[in-house]
Image 1 (cartoon, rainbow, N blue to C red):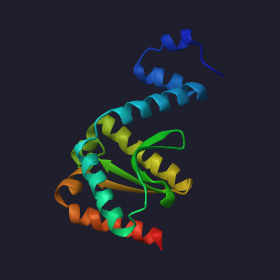
Image 2 (spheres, rainbow, N blue to C red):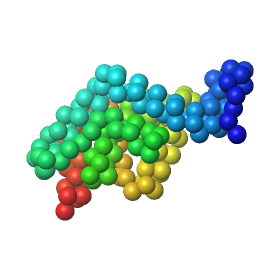
Image 3 (spheres, rainbow, N blue to C red):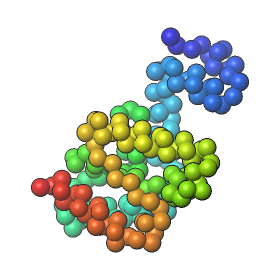
Image 4 (cartoon, helix red, strand yellow):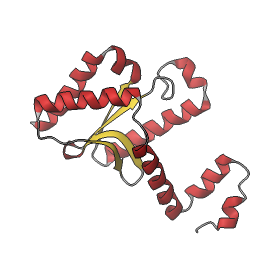
Length: 160
């Protein structure tokens, strides 16, 4: 049952407001579109810029006609960092802190929430036939060769 505007304004906290909003599919869709619009208008982060250059390099070598998109919207719910729709491949550049690379980062409840969201997103996208590759920020910066090899193998395996 949709929640009235008056009820939405009465939420006691942001978390309660999110729970109320999440119960209304129409409002949830509006929020997802708004998040997508916000993401596509902001400048890419450093890890995203490195990932985009990496995708350009690997696709130019393997399949110059292969197209990919940044800030790609999937399942009317998520906007992923990059996707190669024809290969059903999602590429994410995850920040070391905000996605919980180090155990001490995981003490932050926001990081734990991000990690849970990442796992949920991976599961749902996998169920929808997509493969998700996640690259840590530190790997994109310090170990680009390994990232290149991983992306190369993923794309080459799907082109066969």
